[in-house]
Image 1 (cartoon, rainbow, N blue to C red):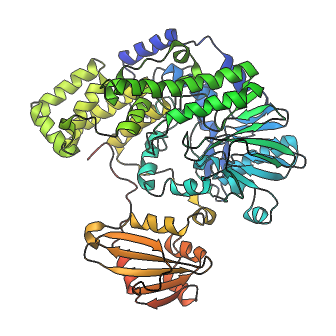
Image 2 (image 1 turned 30 degrees about the vertical axis):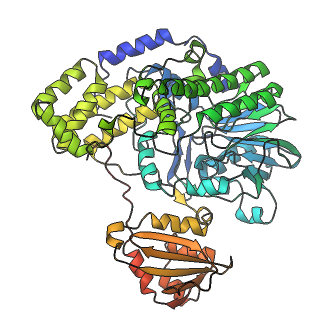
Image 3 (image 1 turned 135 degrees about the vertical axis):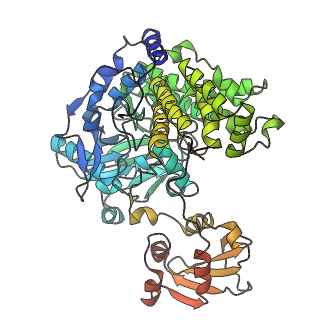
Length: 633
């Protein structure tokens, strides 16, 4: 970024300290990331049908150079490793596509074709990865697809490797953990707009690629744009130890709900002595709570499942691979890798609980939380994606909530009102700005950021605090070992200088994704859009007769609340209006933007009663703001 500040002497000194403190002489990861390399694509860019670039791995070519002073050297190392691109052999009959997406696609050769684990985020990247595999391994048909878990970068590209028609015809199974369908379509419904906006900060989606911009995400380079889809599973994994044979490949599953995703599973290939750990053990500390926002994950059960994986599978494996980053070979190393990952999550959990029971609050615990030396000096337990600070606070939040027990924090003023009072308390704008500049010059960037935040929220038209805050965030970014923190700081600096970049990560949602929403989820999402005060005086009752599911779903608007439920009770009061339609038509007219009146005129919707009640409801629905302010009021 041309208007960014140079790394300060304080940041350069931090980097020099890290170069001597961390085991940079250990180059094992560099050997592992290159192991089994077969071929790279002719170009690192992938385009969609419209000619637009959906993926550009070439943009990260700068990572092959020397680490610049504007990037933490530990993060630079991780970024360079995670940007490797190509087709790799994992073990006999098992291959991976890496560097085509933020995630990996794994291909297991069967009797007649290939079984795919995690078909990436969008169809374009998945299709390109499959094409590279076929170029070097033959034109094998896809005979099965496995989703390891319910996050979009592990299923959204499924239509790049198969078709809905082939799945419906029974030509291949789609296998997923129990609860996958519910969580895959629902995770981002309730808080989807806010999560997506914050994800743009976490992943640095609007930032330039380069030494003053984003260098990746810590577990891959970035999230592609393109055609996002979902083909629902045809086989559910409901119990650990469940075995399926797909195209002659024997596959054993370990369910791990509540770990990195609410629906997740590890995969063991006993005949290949290969273990897939999904996203439960990868070459970085993961998030217990992501900066973009999500439900807090369970570090305790996460560690328990990793113990189970070691006991039942790792000791019988020659290689462990995951849905991100690179594999680890050799039984002893496989066991050690998973045990260290287990120790990390278990230690984070247990020590946070020990200290909160001694009265410390989350910020106090996180401020001084050294890891055991074996974890501190191991590359794959470093915080490139998750961080100790974020994760300790997440464990605290899971058990204790946002309130730390001090009544002074029970009813604080909201940001703007608090900021104005703090500015007055600090002696006014000029005095506080002097203190912020002094903190900046001394390298106390955390304190400078706090002071400047008050000044910005007290008066966001004042350019001097905004400019200094942008510089402060850049210094914090240059020092950050976590890619997620670096991206957050740099995104904030960008918006302070240039205004909101909105939510640039939106992919094209296919009809197959929308069709995965059930009736309850459709109206749950609608309920969250109701502007309560505008709807206080409105009352209406609507019946939605879903003809292809033989059900009636009643929707009531009262007291600013949208209530909905199935019913069969003929004694209920008659609805103001009734709509008879199929589930696909419901999706089309309420979610996909099809014209409701046209669907009614064509006979796709039968209306009985007063349709004006639906118009009345639509009139009190708010549109989410995909560009809401984050670092300004």
